[in-house]
Length: 143
Image (tube, rainbow, N blue to C red; front, side, top):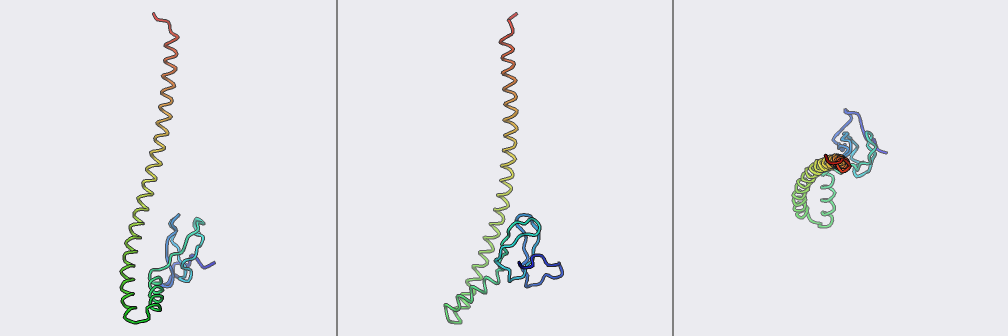
């Protein structure tokens, strides 16, 4: 298994630095580990090591260049890929914001469900008390 957490002084530009989505622990791994699934040393959750954008862009340009075969097409494709990359980053940011909102809404839903459970319990207790009072009043002779 690749080295998941080098000492702080050992992190280089060749490392992928990211956080565990479960516990938030900062992790670093050599770029050669990009795309692998590793266990977070903090919480043991399986985490996929992200592939850096520059690596994806370079791979895509090389693939397209080999298909296109001309130098001018490579430049056009590189420009198009850079535009696509900025759109992907924008969408990733939107996804991050939506994920945060979803977590907040799920927490609110859980809190509301807990409150509703407490209210249901209280209403049941009130109804039982009213039933007992009604029973007592029915057994009490009029004066």
